[in-house]
Amino acid sequence: MTLTQYMDNLKGKRVAVLGIGVSNRPLIKLLLENGIDVTAHDRQDREKLGEFGDTIEKQGCKLKTGEGYLDSIEADVIFRSPGIRPDLPQIKAAVEKGAVLTSEMEAFFQVCPSKIIAVTGSDGKTTTTTVISEILKRAGYKVHVGGNIGTPLLDRAETIGSDDICVLELSSFQLMTMKKSPDIGVITNLAPNHLDVHRDMEEYIRAKKNIFVNQPQPKRVVLNYDNDITRSFAPEVTGELMLFSMRDKPENGVFLKGNNIVLSQNGEETVIMDSRDIFIPGSHNIENYMAAFAAVCGLADFEAMRETAKNFKGVEHRIEFVRELNGIKFYNDSIASSPSRTTAGLRSFKEKVILIAGGKDKGVPFDSLGKEIVTHVKKLVLTGLTADKIEESVKKAGGELPIIKKDDLKEAVISAYKAAEKGDIVILSPACTSFDRFKNFEERGKYFKEIVWGLE
Image (cartoon, rainbow, N blue to C red; front, top):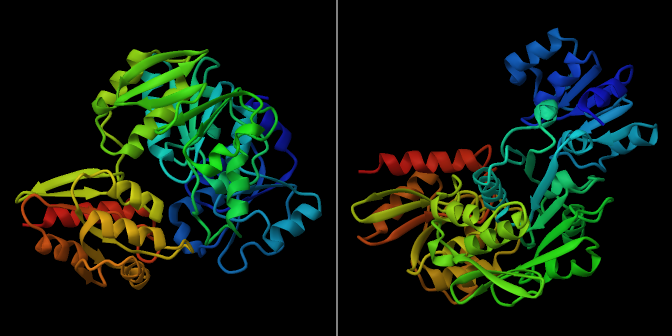
């Protein structure tokens, strides 16, 4: 189905778009440009939609905003924002009356004319997605990046060629109602995450599995062999299964042999590259590259893989080097919104670091993080709503390191700098979401960098 055909099928129907955020704004404009009857619902008050609200109203969009924005949804088709649960009573009531529930990403899967590679997981999604796209670009493909990163792609579907490749990062929220699978699906790892939104870990896992359990199943599924949960998915894969491992040699996949990253396929082993040549630090980034190599095997040659690994400088807010001041190095790892993500960041450095952590609680226990902090941190600076919980986890783990608690991130950074000595590393790796003070992790990371560049 083409995008034009998809839009034609919506004509004469009432369409509700739930959430007027980044991913849905191009969708709303696209629907209106095609003469479709649209009602856009958003929790924000009308005035906060500003100029965009004015524009779409002039184009004929009806707005339902503020408290009660989901009450009495009257629609034939509902496009759900990923941040809105599909089983809310108001949505269920509309579906029971005959409405079809979908999303911008689900629609894109229906109309995309090219191969789709999709990546999900608890940690490493963005880096793995970006690495895959960079390798494919170097191999000569025209690549479109979307999903959680890049730009929404539905309104651009007609500009995508059949020989192009779309590389998508997909969250558990996007996958909850997904009914189609990509050509190649990658799951980097799974650990407790987003349990403040998902009902339990089982629901979170089910959502992630939607990247490969739908029909038709992917031609290739890439799984982390070292992660107990993702390894358990292997028997359910009906297409080509490729595993990646830091510890074992899979029959079909990518693994670490000494310092070499090796492809195992059809009974043969081929060295792809020396892992020490990867520019961005950390063993978790070796895993990200192995996942990416497994995904692009057969599409890109080893030279494209090696050159990308040697030259790619990493993604903003992911163990991003900010500056060195008086012999003290500052790193921004604001993406680390879970204990497992912070653990990976801490393990990226050979020396003990000064850690700045804390934020909004998302229902994930900090017990394992406390042990990692005791092992990898020399001084701990805590801020945000979870400061007391993280401190308690460190004390439970027997930690006796200095702990500083500050109410404000700026004060926390200044305190970390004052506590540091020449040769030290200061890293912001919160282990929590940013929503206690910031709109998202990007805003938190940018503010951290501003503070660091303001230090003297």
